[in-house]
Image (cartoon, rainbow, N blue to C red; front, top):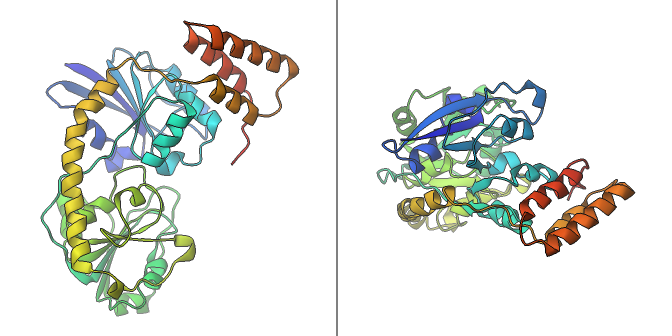
Length: 366
């Protein structure tokens, strides 16, 4: 049996969301996984509390990555799974931490950018098992507030022309976010009920069962996330138009997308709601089949010997986007570029030397 070490954010110890990809990709009869939970070391690298990671066949990093983490790992097969919502703002210098690694990327937009950069990325698109087709009552709304921006005030603005009979607010926020409390008048008018945490998946499903409208709880998601729980039951998912929601939802076809910065009132009479409900449900059925078919290729990628592939053009582009280079560093960089163009072997070693120079400098934003 092969051993896997999974290193992820401490918050995932509560949500168990890091288990999803591991449980889906690695069968328990062939793999044994140990989990290590750490805080966000990007903000305070010196605070890393992680034991040495040794004697593992595969090490999987989910969401968090830094040189401090990598130095703790003694394994030749390290996989990084970035979360789009967490890493969308990373600049090139941050992604350099991944040059030795294989990346399983849950969003197509980020995957394309990483491939263009030269990193070794493999696109994955997870879908859960579909549930029973329970489209629910379109006058009932479910909102799990996880972030500040997706809150009761926004929902009442989007749905102000809709005949709402009931709203359920789930109060389980992501770290550093605050719950927006509805007024007493709103609680009475919209029959608002509350919950704080579900002990298991069945409690969660029971809570959303009667809702016809499911509000995606974040501005961005790392990959497949809570909003698909609405789709897999045939509910109308209303989501901000960003990743990964807009990679699963086609506006007006199997869900509704809006711009949180320019929120417009939703007129449900403009849509074929029964067709949208069926399309949402069917998209999960079709997506699940494709996901299961892709697992063999994912495992092949994990066991492959692929490394990052940087062209001289890409390297020079990276160099040119850096600033404050010293004259001697520019000379050294150019010498290494010349060696890279002519070297038949040891290119990866040269790449690391090149990026050691770049790593000292901040990249311009945008």
